[in-house]
Length: 106
Image (spheres, one colour):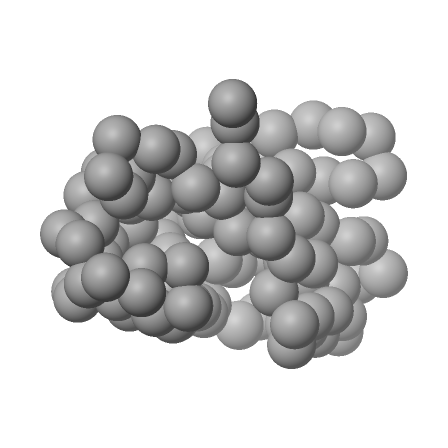
């Protein structure tokens, strides 16, 4: 049975079109037994048209240190466009997803 996805409580976030931001997400609540987390990955989807813009709006690779997930650097967002940031980790043989919304602004 797949586990439910989880939305970040703090979103939506706003990000300027000239900013480069690597977001940090704390997965402690989703890993109460301090199991080793592996395989961090992230995608970025333009909500307006459902297009995956990971290759053109994210630079680098996701990483994990303890329970802290760091996304690749997000950049070049378009003013007024909403993006869904999806973060995936593996814990105890399960893949967990956390997600949030980023709104591009000038």
